[in-house]
Length: 371
Image 1 (cartoon, one colour):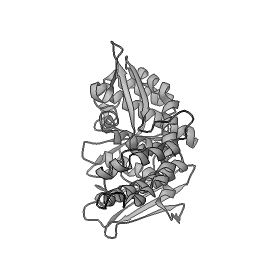
Image 2 (cartoon, one colour):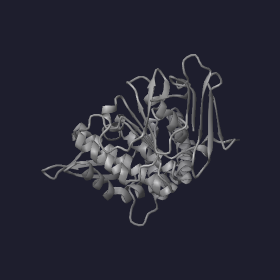
Image 3 (cartoon, helix red, strand yellow):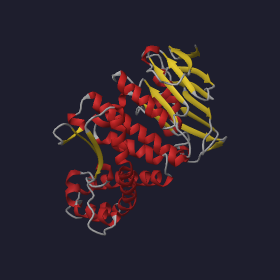
Image 4 (cartoon, rainbow, N blue to C red):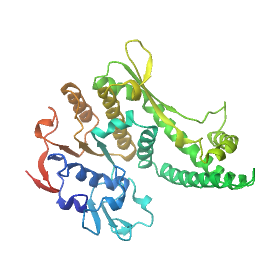
């Protein structure tokens, strides 16, 4: 069951999602993506599109509310309320208010496919780091806690660096140094889990790209500013790097070493067998192919670590893809154990052949009804 109130242009929506899922048809700008965003909110407790909570409130409303009943390894019922005036958000799991919002992150395992996913490949490194952080945070409480502590320490070291730059030489070093131990401790865990995941899925990523239709050799590897010597611990190496860069970091006012600077390097070797960065040299179709492969890997990771298929949210995912590649993606989704699915498209003709039959709904001006 899904209940939405005053979220973007959705004033009142109450739906009992069929076990297999639903097909939502509507023209662009009518609320299809808003509906998927509302569902995905249960995973991140924030907008997947990066909007602030106050900007998610429907015009003229005081706040928004999202509620859902689900089958999950973490809870059976969730409610999220946000008050725009006080900018306060409250989350309940099974009727109990969460003391910390992080306690409810990842309660509904979900993967969202959309045309915007091309930014995973063509965009800045921050898009790929965010992809890794979301996936690993909702499947590992340890990773989520380390990420929160790392970001807090990073903010404080950067602030100390800027303050130190205004002091006489060496006077502010102690205030910078105090944040390097937590950065090294928590950053080492982030680095290790990211790298382990990339190493584990490297071959599968190449297989998925081939299965979708890419003829060249596609590879992915984790590129880090952290370089370990033989037998050295990541925590020790990161602590040394932070210390050695302290003077230069002070001049710039920012921390230039750590997992917040790392990236996923995705390359494609064409007929000349020379690997080139896909974000720079790949076509739109090749970039979209790699992005969909990343989403399929995300779905597989959620399924393996959470013990069941995630909810699949498909926001016009086959846009700009030829029929052959779209058909192969449908086959891969089926092979990966396609769970409950919400597919949103502008027109019924945008549904590729082979897609499972789903109950049909319409959306217009923020109103959703069964067709």
